[in-house]
Length: 339
Ligand code: NAD
Image (cartoon, rainbow, N blue to C red; front, side, top):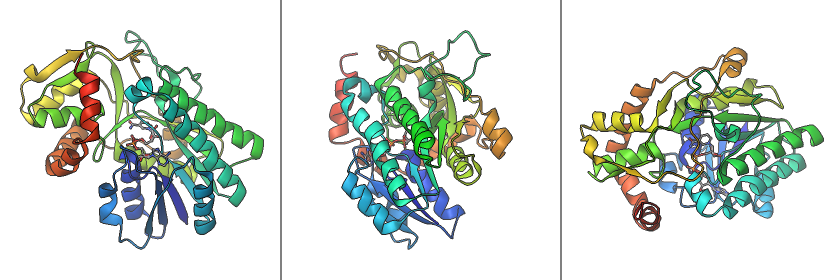
């Protein structure tokens, strides 16, 4: 079986490639990635010589390039991770989010229709459901929760999901969608909460926390997400949406304090900055469907996952220090300098 993994030089995609090459020795993985600021070829270096792996630099919005790849590879499965994924960047400049996340998805699915495919899997997010109030811990997102987005990022992901469902209904494309909660783990770009806080704490720099830090996220260790997608492409029912989450809710400030505790750094490093525009209060996934239908459940507890992640960032300092120099530095200063 040949699987095209788009966005495989990014955080979750690269973890998925490692997971698949290890778990399924008979399968071939082709990674299509345009290497934006979030894509990093050094992440994939250890598998570059693997004969079951091929890396192709290309843009999912480039119809000619996508068609050429499908002609060459005749893939059985496409798993689409490629996206612009950072909410703050989507607030600054939504255009590229619409292009990659919506148009890119349509281009990939058109190629799937043209060349035939056993499964197209769309990697989506719980952010398509909007948010939940902080004072209703009894409420969770189910697959039936209406789409109700807050940011240009989540609106673009929800639009893609709607297109995926439309391609299934209209053209009979064999699709599945997973909507996952916040991931953390190795190879995450240090603009996202957990790696940013680890990196800043390691450098004894201020840890910028939005608002009061009371926004709640449902955290999932990235390998658990990879295992869920693997289960869905093999056993998931065509046309269905699967929520993926770990019942691991924690407020941002609690996460930040946990990181400081593990790194033995003082809480005085925390600096509260002006809140993100339209900041979602709480995300919480009900993963009952994937558990009941596919037997999936997360295996990594939050505290254990945070410990593993910190250990990884300590061991791979050069990886993230290279990334946060240059262009990213300018972006970081623009985002946090005047808050
Ligand atoms: P990421 O930003 O780390 O990686 C995105 C990758 O896509 C990068 O390698 C980038 O180079 C590539 N890419 C971007 N535009 C492209 C294009 N036009 N053509 C080809 N490649 C392109 O993102 P991530 O955090 O790994 O997220 C992966 C997917 O999972 C996204 O679709 C995201 O919406 C979804 N998701 C993420 C989370 C999370 O917590 N990170 C949670 C749920 C869902």
